[in-house]
Length: 138
Image 1 (tube, rainbow, N blue to C red):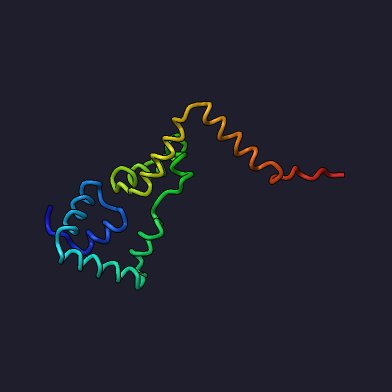
Image 2: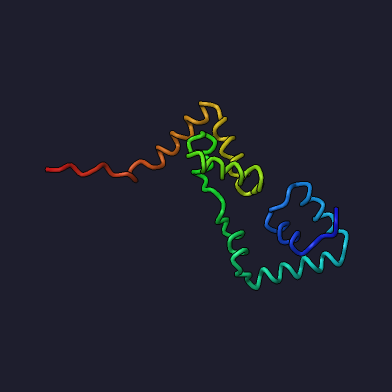
């Protein structure tokens, strides 16, 4: 791997590197005192509060599709332009946050029917009395 940069350390801390790159950055930080110092510096900068547009954008996942959109993406129930964006976000940008959400939703989709029925029953039972029937007109 080439020299570790400040930006790579930011990406490492934001879980925005591939598994292989993150592993290489971590190994380099563990083995080099200058990178440990750079990591401490970057962490101190973050603690002071970086309020640049880019930092807020990354921290708040503003370009990330919602979990509902990811579920609709898996069901192929989005408009074509939104499907294209979500695909780009997951496969080209490879957002680790959204990929984890997608993988979780996939796992839920593949659960066995008895597990799904049991989960639905628990949700139903836990919500009894929370939803009031509509008032009837007199």
